[in-house]
Image (cartoon, rainbow, N blue to C red; front, side):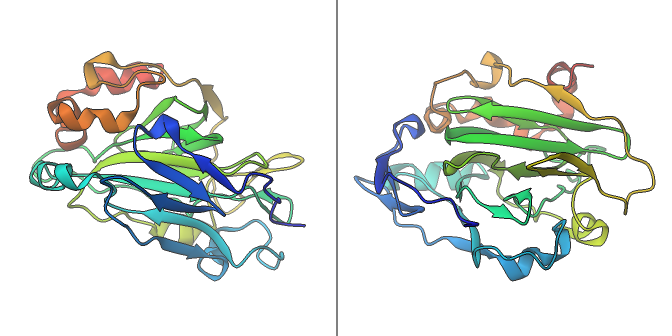
Length: 258
């Protein structure tokens, strides 16, 4: 069995702060939420980045809902050049590897010598965020209510290491396109997370020793444990770090333990 069976047929996603439900690994939109159709990441699209490219697995690996919001907030979020997304990753295994996202980097901010960051929140389940540069590899484990920043210059992959479905949200600047090319070229991140531990990706010539970090609160960004990240819609100025990261170098260094 590669896709773990779920005993819960319908679950309210209370930690999102939105009238959202999860049913059969799909989001159900209630109240004033506008309906969003998911972009589905298929097994065939992930072959390049898998440890075992021939392993049997579910055809659909995860769903991405881009631009989720209450109808009354849509214009405000758009005019602030932001986007709020939700990703649903069912518990599954691909061979002995845990299901994961494809992985991507962000481009540089126009006119600045730094890249766009991103911020994630676990709504339900458990996430392992794998962050990497040429010289650094960081693993951040997060559970429901916790937030994790993807700092400028770091590529990132999300792994669901549990049987339970992972539901996570992110805020991001809406105008750039993610770059998946390095992960495809290298066949994944520097490490694969498997049921027997971490395995190095030998397509990388130099692999730094993994570091483990914990999620931390950033009140200046409005990021606090168990406070729904969507609530920042009432104070979008706190998300300025997503658009102008060059102003917040010290905060990113604090998160990275530098």
